[in-house]
Amino acid sequence: MGTSLRRYFSGLDHSRQGLTALFRLKDECRSMTLVDLTERCIDACRQRFVGDRHISYSVNDGKSLPTVADSSADLVFSFDSLVHVEIDVMSGYIEEIARVLRPEGVAFIHHSNMAAFKRPDGEGFRIENKHWRGRSVSADIIAAFCAASGLCCYRQELVNWGCPDLIDSFSYIARRGSSRDRRREVIENPRFMQERIRLSKEGWKAPFA
Image (cartoon, rainbow, N blue to C red; front, side, top):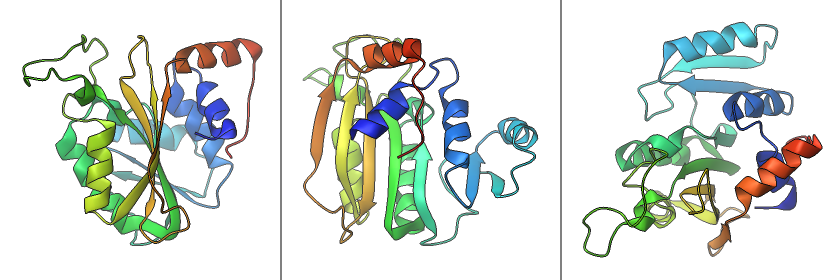
């Protein structure tokens, strides 16, 4: 990922990444729609952001964006949530991203790369899945689903998360034919957790860029 985004995400408070991301993103946009499967989470966000009138809220079915209009989103963002879901959920969201993105919109999706560690015989995994990552999802699989949905997964950063292995992926997604439509770039970053810890200790903070 670009330097600004890498620092942005590396600097998130590891104990409450999603909430920290919301605080930073909400002040960088004219309107925002928060979507979650759990009504309790949406209610908590309503209370926390009660003064932010540009934010709307939606409880969904866990794989769609029913209140987001076609071709209306400049950014679709998910961090430290979809890492735990399987490919049926991810494929549903990819289809929705294809529907809601504006022509030059971008999606940033943090998801599992666990399927990349399947044994060659298909029986089990080469590493322990101790962080409960989606077993059927990998960076390559997501890129293929994007292509099938008329999207371009133009950049993926494979990162470690609580272990040495690259069990997660940050995927950047855009529309085919957009200015970001190009051959996929795959970056391996086995030092992501070290970057996060260092920046957190330094007290580094940055606006979304």
